[in-house]
Image (cartoon, rainbow over all chains, first blue to last red; front, side):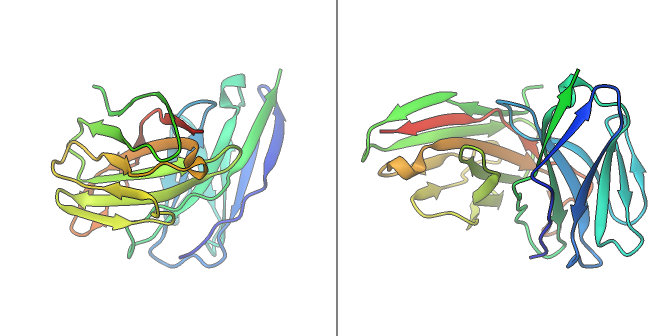
Length: 110
Length: 118
């Protein structure tokens, strides 16, 4: 199974943009890149996903490298409520297992 | 719209006791799964199901049993609890079609069951 690598932790100040990186050098052509986040004491929640093109939604933007070996989740203006663990996951065509790594813990300071 | 409901929210067991963690979803999702999350760690997949009567093992299945008799429910059974099973357990559901998780459909998670085994 293709794996992802994320930094253990990152920090940001409130109202600043945050770029959360994810490396997935063994990604296959049919793997989708999904991002989830987990707020304290809650279950994970879906943020965004993409295949090749950059994607935007009301929560965040996803920038995917041209070779697809890395991606970046962009929070345009961090708020205190964005403090969470962010998981980058590959959804593979040929498996029903969605495997989470350890994610990136984002701290946001006022 | 309740989404994914897990019960109980908290549970304390003694070593060797058995119990069932309940998970129900009202979104008509065929795919359901169980994860455990140990302190400071990511989620690890225990078991999953792609429809009624179909279950399969995830990364850490030992010590856990599952069954799927209806689309809505996916209970997780601990037959003989051990301290190593102290964890937070999350249930998730998702759309499933033609032999695969739907690419553009997210997983929906419950709020977890915090289990302590003494």
